[in-house]
Amino acid sequence: MSAPLQETKIRSASKEVVLGGMHRFCIIGERINPTGRRIFQDQLRAGDLSAIERDVKAQVEGGADVLDVNMGVPLTDEAELLAKAVTMIQSLTDLPICIDSSVVEALEAGLSAYEGRALVNSITAEDERMEQILPLVKKYDAAVIALPNDVDEIPMEPDKRLMLVEKIVRVATQEYGIALEDIVIDPLAMPIGADTTNGLATLETMRRIRDTYGLNMTCGSSNVSFGMPGRHTLNGTFLSMAMTAGLTSAIMDARTPEVVSTVKATDLLLGHDEWGSEWIMRHRQAQKAAQEAAAAVT
Amino acid sequence: MSAPLQETKIRSASKEVVLGGMHRFCIIGERINPTGRRIFQDQLRAGDLSAIERDVKAQVEGGADVLDVNMGVPLTDEAELLAKAVTMIQSLTDLPICIDSSVVEALEAGLSAYEGRALVNSITAEDERMEQILPLVKKYDAAVIALPNDVDEIPMEPDKRLMLVEKIVRVATQEYGIALEDIVIDPLAMPIGADTTNGLATLETMRRIRDTYGLNMTCGSSNVSFGMPGRHTLNGTFLSMAMTAGLTSAIMDARTPEVVSTVKATDLLLGHDEWGSEWIMRHRQAQKAAQEAAAAVT
Image 1 (cartoon, rainbow over the protein chains, first blue to last red):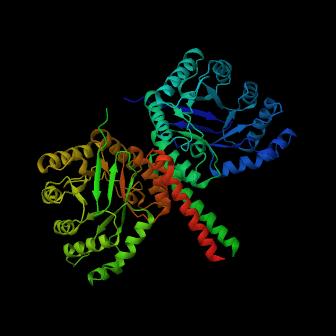
Image 2 (cartoon, chains in turn red, purple):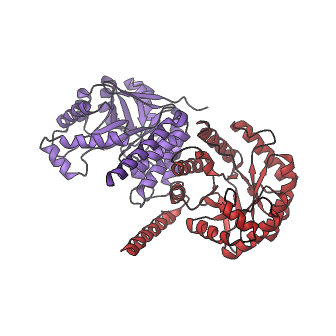
Image 3 (cartoon, each protein chain N blue to C red):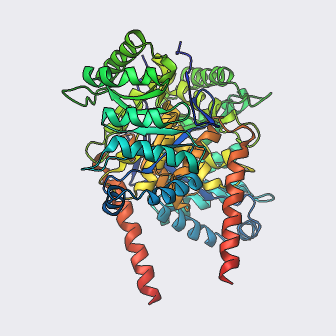
């Protein structure tokens, strides 16, 4: 017997998104992040948050259900910046937010500014991270993304990852009173280019996490194709396989229609898109956009 | 414990293709078939087999590993036509052939003309079909595709389908001495547009056939998207999910690069493409073709 499937509820002031069960896959738009974007970093450092508006618009239009917000800019007060960004983004969209930082103070500032029920990104199985962040998750009634790695290593073997998931679940539920449904595991999708057995190991890990705990899962899907050609096809295909194995959300760039389409097709084939209405609507919108583009040319 | 994975070996005079185990997915090119093609039917009726050459070329270039050959033209001697087509195709390509007919005499004529070890398409769980065709499969040392439906119905419930698979396996191995590895099940992928639970039922059926028997499987993947928009994306996505559940081949049109690419990406992610060499080669060929096309324009 498999464990019952958990449902993770996150909310903005006016909109609820549910991960898991028979709900559609949750696309967590990943682009609101200055990592590796020098111009955006300079703007943020100068207190100019206007570029965020464009990124939010693009992710929403691409089909994001939730927005991941990271303000990790070196040499800034990340806590202040993240709080400001959260408030600003909530004025632009009603999508719930995934508050993303490696800095504990920034997570707290973001949570404190946020209206609704946030997703926190992230803890690991390291004792220190759990001690610092789980009390905040509890205090602000949030859900949390947890990575099954510890101080020593990112284990590849499904057995070891499952042991770390077991530790996370035990500590979070028993020591901090976090509900099982509010723990979202990121099973660490590793590049297939480094080792072609990585895909199977990740899929097995996902299947076992679903069957053992019924937990929701997320991952950064673009990692899988790192160093390989044809990345969009690999990323989309991986998501489809992973959804079949229990993945219920991903932190991904919603601006890539090929990948979003594959996710929507998988939702339909898994019975998560009743009557196929989402799939058919998406196709009609694409047709309409193509017709408008053609009309604009002539 | 799951059953060991079977390997089905089929051959032309000079080339062997293995389905299953850790081998790459087997693309059975489906286009050499006059069903629904009036001009092709008229040509064949007049004894003109020249159009076959173009279809063979297109399937081979698209990446077919095996060719499905069906010569079901009303008001012709299908047996004679199929035997001729098999001989002609074997002069054009070294790919093994899947001999496809609902007429027993045509299957026998095709098998008799074939050089190598063929795949026979197909039997059902109906007693009469098994009695007529399994002796031929044994006599010509072929492998056979079997559909889990009987006289009364095409059952949708995985339990019922598994019972029919059990019957097919029992009769074929015990009464006709066919090896388990030479039975390839087509678990009947039904249109998702008719009922959005069809996808999950098919995937569960596949998983159970793999885990219980380790049998190879095939399906006509384009069936799944019948009546829906965005068929290529749905077909490719379904194949990827089905491969994750144990599907090891499909009868499909190899001329659709989107679907073939998704199959190759899934092979890589399942660890069936060591070092990713097939994936990288495919990408390089596509790049080269695009460059040549661009050069031809300027």
